[in-house]
Length: 160
Image (cartoon, rainbow, N blue to C red; front, side):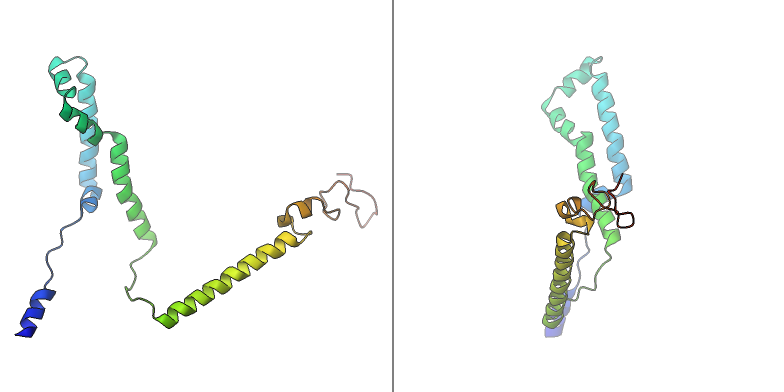
C-alpha cells in the first residue's frame, strides 16, 4: 500500500514550458517583430486616417505602444538570447554537490592560486627593471627609454 502512494508522489506531471522559453522560440519572436512593424505602420497611417487616429489615441493603444516598442522586444528577447548563449558556454552539470572534503580541497587550491597571483603581481610592481612597476620603471636610469640611460657598451648617454 505504501509503495503505491510513493509511486503516485513520484509521478511526474507534464512540464509546461516557461514564458521566457515560449517567447524565445524563433517563430513567436518573428511574429512579435512582424506585429511591431505593423503597429508602427498603423501609427504612421493614423496621421492620415481619422478612424485609426481615434484608436491610436485611446488608453489601450498606450499599453500596446509599450508592448510593441522595439526596445521592449529587444529587452525581453535579449534575456532569452543571453541565456541561450550562456547555456552554450556552460554545459549542464552532473548535479552532484561536492563533498565537504572536495569543497575544502578546492577552496585551498583556489586560495593558493590567488596568493601566487598576488605575489607575482607584487614582485612585478616592486622590480625597477620590470615595465609593470610603473614609476619605478619610468624613472630607472637602466631603462633604455629613459633619457638619462647610459649605454653600457659605449659609456655614453642614449641619444634616442
